[in-house]
Length: 164
Image 1 (cartoon, rainbow, N blue to C red):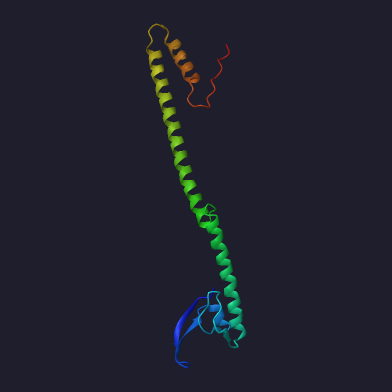
Image 2 (image 1 turned 120 degrees about the vertical axis):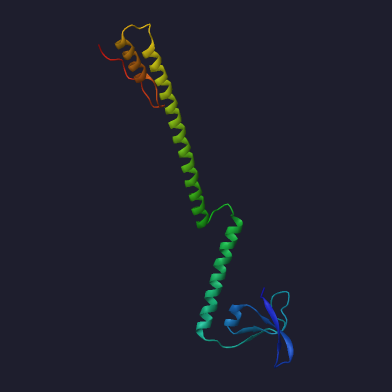
């Protein structure tokens, strides 16, 4: 369907309806009379010769209009399919989310490690103050053994006992 507009033709001294389509005007094609429901003017088209550059411009405009219409249709049919900007925003959001999650994981691991070390330190203090073991060296040996076999991370493997 062709877009139209009306204006007063001074030569005919009446209001006429003219095609508002830029490509038609670039080709020197004008509607004569009102546009009918089928999209054609009542009295046909009036055409004038135009330079080749105008014909080329009209052809290029139509190609670009078709590409735009196809892109808009694809975007309307597939709204869940992101375009380039959507992908960049999604990637940035994903990076921020990953950074937050990894920071929380590192903080959680550090707090777990700190609490295990604090517990180990408390146990060592108790062992060193244990008066049931008379030898001070035996108390120190028990404390060192407790420290070396205490898991401090989830990847900890206990040390084997020293060979005698």
